[in-house]
Amino acid sequence: AAPPLNTKEEDKTENTVSEKQADKEGNKLKEKVSEIKEDRKTRKQEKNKKEDSEDKNTTEKEKPPVAARFKDAEEQEQFIGKVASSKEKNDDIVKILRNYIASLERKLDENKIDYLNLKSQYQEEQAEVEAEIEELNLTIIEKDSLRAKEQLLADRKIALIESEKQLAEAKARQNLYLALFAGSLALGLFVALLIFYRDRIIINRQKNALSESLGEIHQQKEEIEAQRDEIERQKNTLEIEQQESEKLLLNILPAQTAQELKSTGKATPQAYSLASVLFTDFKGFTNIAETMSPEELVGELNICFTAFDEIIEKHGMERIKTIGDAYMCVGGLPNANTSNPLDAVKAGIEIQEFMQKLKEEKTKEGKPYFECRLGIHSGKVVAGVVGKKKFAYDIWGDTVNLASRLETYGEVGKVNISEQTRELVETEFKFEKRGVVNVKGKGDVEMFFVKS
Image 1 (cartoon, rainbow, N blue to C red):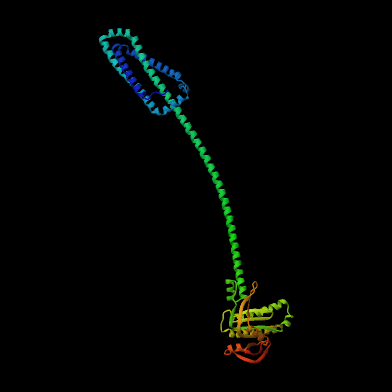
Image 2: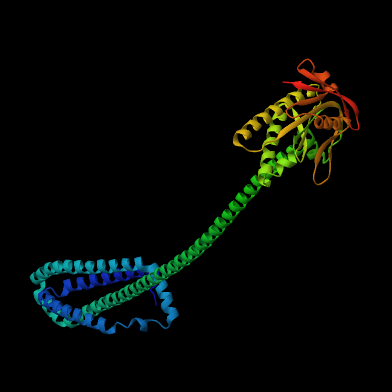
């Protein structure tokens, strides 16, 4: 078992008692054995060497194994627990033992000096008495001295054995702590490696998942961009189609009427008090058409009607329709104005000039050509849109019928107008009076050619 906590104080008390006993025995020696001190010293040295050798052998033999010092493992654990807290105390005990041995050795040296002095004095005064006393008590003194020495050496041996035991136990505990520390360190490193590889696996999985997510996001982004491009393309297509539809609608209807139709879904018929209607057709169209292929015929009509469209647009007129080779347009609507008679006459003159130039070109090329009759009349008309699926902007009234008759009774290359139209533009042009012409369904109608 571990020594008690007051081991140092008990050792000090025992050392003090032993020192006093040694002093007493030294005094006796001073008084009784001065003559034989040198012989005793020699014998003492020999005995000390022998005893030191025996003590060393005895210590090695009697030192029990570590496992046999404890009753059971619990006692061993308790002792190990105390060794850690009493290591410093054991060091102090060793120091005290060493100091005690040094003190004994100093006392012995002092006793030697005193003994020599006493011996010399004693030899001078009572040499004979001391010799006899020494002879009688030598055996007793030697036994007492040896007994005291043996006791001191035994105490020293026990203390040394106990110190060695505590040091061995402390070393064993230290080794145990080192082993535990090394095991804990190895376990910690193992756990750290497990955590590291686990985190690395988790990070790789998350990285792969993130890569897959980024790939999906990139794919979705590409799909969205493709859808956006498709939507943009469709939007552009719709805009183009809408523009084409509006353009087509404007080709069919006047701009104001087309806007009204888009806004409200219907067009309100309008009555105009003054409008100028212009009709044209081509003389001998049927005979000329028979000499052309369908493509050539449509191409020639397209050339003519396109030029007519440009001319009347320049003069603010609206094309109403074409029927075969007949072309019909009107001025003064949908935006009412008072200049439409003059606009119509100017447009009629330019149309005839265009047809004359075209005739000259065709003549040079040796190709057939069209010759145009043209009639204009001014008066009241009603305009509106008819139909649900195929819209058609048209005009109605006696003015339209009379303009058609003026075209029929006109001549090639001339602009034939009625009396009403002449009165509205008489300050702008000169006229060739044709007189009264009997018109079917209208009676006598006075007509005029406009001089260009």
